[in-house]
Amino acid sequence: MERLKLPATLPSLAAFRDFVSQAAFAAGVGPQLLLKIEIVLEELLVNHVMHAYGSGEGDSEVVCFRKEPAMFCVQVIDHGPPFDPLQRPTPDLELAPESRPVGGLGIYLVKSMSSEVTYERDADRNVLTACFAVTPETELKSQAD
Amino acid sequence: MEIKNRRLDASQVVSISGRLDAVTAPTLDTHCKKLIEQGERELILDFKDLEYLSSAGLRSILSVAKAIGTVGGKVALANAHGVVREVFEISGFLGMFRIIDSLDTSAAT
Image (tube, rainbow over all chains, first blue to last red; front, top):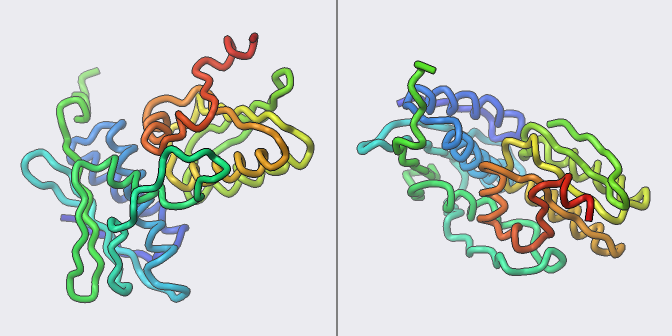
């Protein structure tokens, strides 16, 4: 299990992304699945930047681990007040551009792109865990070619 | 992320390459709104060289669509592929915008 803790700000996004990419690469995740994992990571971190600490400052922590059978998981943790973004209602995807609200799609993408995603409140921490099935087609091809 | 413009008949083609994420999305928003201010009424966003798109990018596209909609214009989405297309599909954007799968052939019509 590997972890990285940085301020919950947009400039931290790149470092978190590199950190997760390396862990995913080591776990045999292929490039297409990696892009989905990066999207889920960004949505969860941006959620922190916008909501977790109000106007104050705090840290985001990211943990990567493998889970049997063949899952790669990314955990995103903050120390803000209890907040479960997964409870957000699904946006109305049928609305025309003019009447469509500009927000709400991020968490929907998280739910759609991960194999499973859970929220838990652990002491003073919000813990969101997104797991991705590393199936043969999403696995990194052998280095032979 | 890199943004380039080219004219195609009455449209302005805006090609976006690289990653459209929470850090870069505001740049696209500003860029397109400047084009609308300059009088452009048909924007074609070309994603041929875009490899990554998050909800921040969707928000920018939606915001540009609303801005051009208020002055009677339109946005079309072109050449989305891979995970970018998947994000458009999940979010319902494929049903919401004019989709151009091959920019050059559709340009002739």
